[in-house]
Length: 346
Image 1 (tube, rainbow, N blue to C red):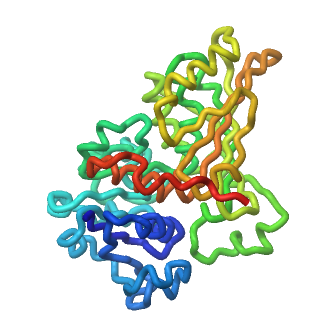
Image 2 (cartoon, one colour):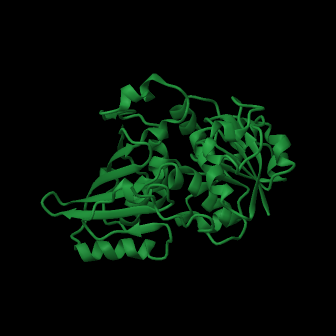
């Protein structure tokens, strides 16, 4: 039995993680951490868990939790995990951090983009970027996992094969991404009110979104050289989902069949990445509630560019599901354990 603790359990990502873990017979959630709801029953906050959870929310004492948990998930704002983690804690338990605290290897870049001082830069080097499709073996032996962001997960999986194979000029990549409102978190904000988002779409974080350096760093590893991209996210009036449409210039003439073979080369053995037929656009409705990522592409001979497309559920493959996928790897379990849910439709 894996004993798991969730700090930040009453945020959207934390609650989704609880929902997924509660379906498993081999996991016991021993801690529902929430700074805002200490002492309140978790099921009274998320009534979808009624009869499944009979536990009150506890505080965010990571050191105390480390004494009883085999793995700690931190679904918390940036800065929290870095401020709490210690060598003593890491010697007792494993941590899967859903924030950005350990995703970016250059602490100066992290502090520049997130506007906070990193409290424990000494752990950045050992943290493993938790994208199983590229770091599977490193994840298995990790103590500290940096769970990727939702936009970076979809953006990277959509573009990685062609960057890795040198088919495109990575410095010409333009990523147009759209997310449902759950990506903004559960905290009350005017910009997230129903009347503010319903029947409307908008770009935000233009030329400065915090996921930009994370995407660039991972694509740089794939390309074997520094990569600079243009990334623009958009807020759309739906609960869940991320849709990425990325564009890049081709550096050689290729056929549709050759490009499809490249995607198949990297993903044919990946349970959670579904390569669609060329030209078939992924849709968020076909991944909702699941840990699947749908990817596709379309060559544009007229402009000598390629359009790369992807769709994920931002709460599952973009957050909680990927965190559980990482947990499975940590404990030597089949990667899809507890994550075989077929997408919900309608």
